[in-house]
Image (cartoon, rainbow, N blue to C red; front, side, top):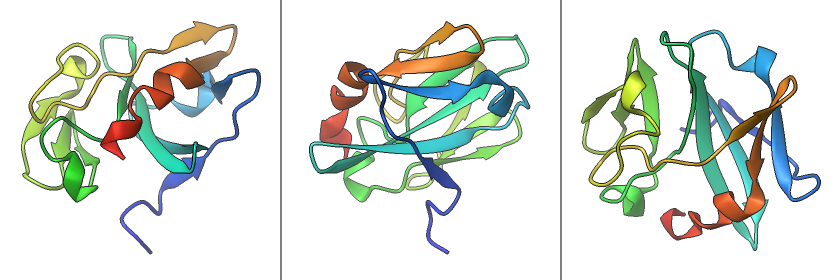
Length: 126
């Protein structure tokens, strides 16, 4: 079991990846990966207690060279490299430093959709 063993690989369709909303509404961070241009791009999605769906790359501006990502500890995402903690309600809101790098997403019906152009914009993290 590797550090990313709980990561689910997605296949893009129509230039986006889609995740059923029912899969990510339990308050837990769910980790995903998609391959683009030979790189595995990792991100997570979570529904926070304020009712918002939040998405971010599993990387940050500072620690991305270590390629360790984050894990969830209650209402916080924790950097697996430096140990800094970020409250879940800040995911997707705050960028820079060790904050999880925001990733744009939108809901469409009963799915969360993330455009491949938004995912590949973060390729430098991986």
